[in-house]
Image (cartoon, rainbow, N blue to C red):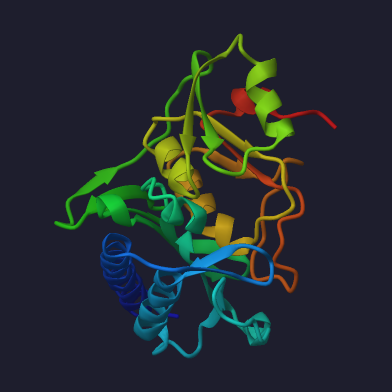
Length: 266
C-alpha cells in the first residue's frame, strides 16, 4: 500500500467513525431495546447501525480484511496483510446504563500490529487518533487537534478502574497499593486508554480472559503513541489478526514502566 493509498484509507476511517458516533447518539437520545447475544453480552440497534456505517465507508478497500464484533468471522482475513479491527460500540452495557462512557474502536492492522487507530467517544464527539511512529492526537468535530502524552507520575497515581466489569483481583490492585495510588476513576471501555493518553490517569489492569482483539487493538496504539505502555498481564506485547481472537491474559496500560509494580507477580 502506497503512502497516498494509506492516507485515503485513514480519511475513510475518520469519516466513518464520525458518522457512526452521530448515529449512536441519535439512537441513545431517542431510545432503544436491548437484546442478549449467545455469549450473554448485550447488543442494541446502535451497535448494529455503527457497524453498518463503518463497513459502508470501508468496504471499498477489498484488499483489507475485516474483523468486527458484530459480524461473523469467516477467517478470510487471515490471508490479508492489512485488516480492519472494529468494535462498533465498545461498552454496550455502559451505553445501556446511560453513563456516557462508551466508545467506538477502529484500527488498521498491518502484519499483526496496529498501524492506525481511532477511538471515538460519541457522547462528547471527541476522537483519539494514532499513527504508528507519528504520535497520538485528540480531535473534535471541528477537527482541531491536540497532541497527547501520558503523565510522568510515579506516585500519587490516578488509577483507572472498570465501570462495570471489575473483579476481585482487580479490586485488590488498589487495596494493595494505597501507598502510591491516590485516586481511582471509574471509566468504561476504551475511554480508559484516552484518559491515560491525556495524562488524566496513570494505570489500568484487567485480569480477565473475556476480552477480544477488538477491545484492545485501538487502545494499544493510542496508549503507545502517547508514550505509554500497553501489554498483557504477563508483560507480553499483543499480536492481532489471529485465528483465536481472545486475549487470554487480560491487558494492562501504564504511563511509566515504574508503575508496572502494580501488576501481580505470578
